Amino acid sequence: MRDKDLFQLALGLTDPWFVERCEFDAQRGVLDIHLNFQRGAKFPCPECAGADRSVHDTEVKQWRHLNFFEHHAYLHARMPRMRCDKCGVRTVGVPWARPGSGFTLLFEAFVMTLAKEMPVMGIAALVGEWDTLLWRMIRHWVDQARSEQDFSEVSKVGIDETAARRGHNYISVFVDLDNSGAIFATQGKDASTVGRFVEDFEAHDGKAENIEEVCCDMSPAFIRGVRDSLPQAQMTFDKFHVIKIVNDAVDQVRRAEQKDRPELKGSRYSWIKNEQNLTEKQAAILGDLSVPRLNLKTARAWRMRLAFQELYRQPAERAEEFVRQWLAWAARSRLQPMIKAGRTIRNHLPGVLRWFASHINNGVLEGLNSLIQAAKARARGYRTINNLITAVYLVAGKLDFGQLYPQ
Image 1 (cartoon, rainbow, N blue to C red):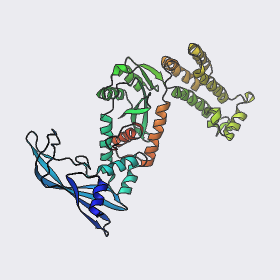
Image 2 (image 1 turned 90 degrees about the vertical axis):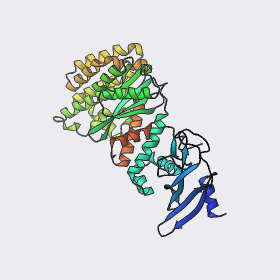
Image 3 (image 1 turned 90 degrees about the horizontal axis):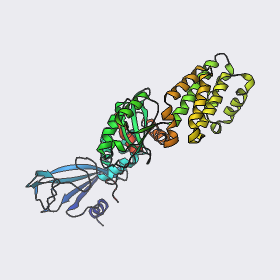
Image 4 (image 1 turned 180 degrees about the vertical axis):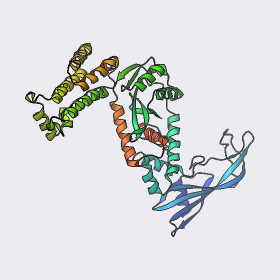
């Protein structure tokens, strides 16, 4: 079999396209495959799809293809431009690349597959291309896949924020809690993020009035945003966030007390981790320090923490009575951090108790956030916030790239 015939089959070319010649430069490590079309071939108009349009003229273009062994491979072709009675002169589309791209579809599919697992900077080094070019490619396919999403059945949404860079530049992520996929991400963590979500949601055939449940933390901005933009939705405060408020209060008690009780130093995780997650050493520290005879304030706060966690094991009809009893205990505890935690929970009590009806939480979103954090760490930071948002959709959006990966 001749090399032209081999590459004709490998590229899946059909009439009128054919491989005209192949040139391999061993010194440069480059394979050039030159394509052409049959003389007299006619093409459909790429805009109106009118058939059998004659070629007006041609222009030579080049596309980066998958490597041939370790060597770079490029496709070259005379791109026909045809004249359409309705649309004028238009460049014909080709089956191996999307319009405007300098890469073949197979090369782009390869990059998109790697991008789900590798930092883009690493992919750029691997394939020998600028990372900015690869980001443009990734954004195109992510935007294309997102444009085809249908949110008409979405009724339960979770909201959380994540830092784009340490300490600043946050993005807010919105998740469909029924299918565990990120459906929207935007810069910031203020109330306007919810409004931008609703605008995007409705652009994907969703209806704001169909959102019955929202799960978020106690951020005043998110609360205000939900009330303004999704007034019909019931709000559940994420139970992991509620428990974290109590855990943080326990740790504040410990930090204040250890100034006078040095035996508390190094014991932080013994007090705030669940018993089943304690290491042997942490469990031993807890056993030594939690005995009543030591009369530690931290031990009292820890026992209050254990009691609060029982809230989510209560039957729905007993939940409000249980939490109000705990709130009274916190109020008279004389432990300022626990008093403050109790006040915060009391001020948000309807959203805390809503869990017993909705049974939704942001555990799904926390799992997606770990994917996002891992992607950020692999990439050692993103050039732009838009790149990070694109990465969120790529790793957590459950997007369908069917056009890129044909069956």
